[in-house]
Amino acid sequence: MEILEQLYEGKAKKVYRTSDPKLYMVYYKDDATAFNGSKKGSIQDKGYYNNQISAIFFKLLTEKGIPNHFVELTGERSMLVKTLEIIPVEVVVRNIVAGSLAKRIGKPEGTQLAVPVLEFYYKDDALGDPMINEYHVKALGLATEEEMKTISQMALRVNEILVEHLTPLNIQLVDFKLEFGRHEGEILLGDEISPDTCRFWDTATQEKLDKDRFRRDLGKVEEAYQEVLQRLTGGK
Ligand code: 5GP
Image (cartoon, rainbow, N blue to C red):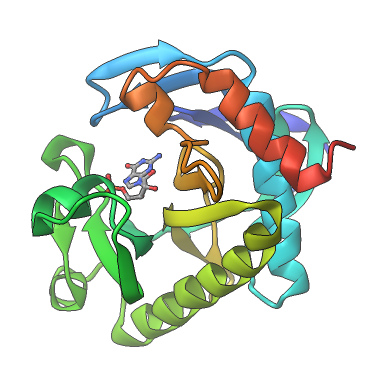
């Protein structure tokens, strides 16, 4: 299989066409952005950490029966994935109040939520990814009601699987963002699952082990990404 031309360059990843029409190659960059691209920087070896961390989570989810785009790692910073027609809806699951929810409902970060909260955002940089609900999704023709039912069930199941996996590693899964797409008539989980797209807090110290260290200039950004990978691999 051959890697052909670059199809797309996003803020954190590049996507390449391959000689297999059903597969793309994703390359993870070290570039970091926040606040809809207004804060820019670079996190040393982030591409490596996010590629490896995402691969571990996608393999776990495959084992647990969650269909996703991951095929195999192809290098330190790259993976082979199934082609997806991306649904422009960002799906956020929250277990603990943080970030935009803390602002929206006026509760302190760290407040435990009684049940996981599912949210949808319209994936549109020009609009700043506004929050939407299932009626907007249907009315705008972004996805069908049946697709949204599948996506919602998958997102909540991903939350259960990740929490179960991370709890013994002393990582609290505060919240995370998922993206889904269509591949040969099936809904697959796509994008990445990494400290760029999840909030991870150390259970004992509440120390942030994710991109909030970059967003909020907390320092030790690379170290946080490295720590997450190290806990996932048991230092192997
Ligand atoms: P919040 O709405 O609090 O800013 O984000 C909730 C969760 O979703 C966080 O874990 C955050 O990292 C993730 N998230 C939401 N929107 C985006 C986005 O556009 N890009 C990335 N990388 N993560 C996002």
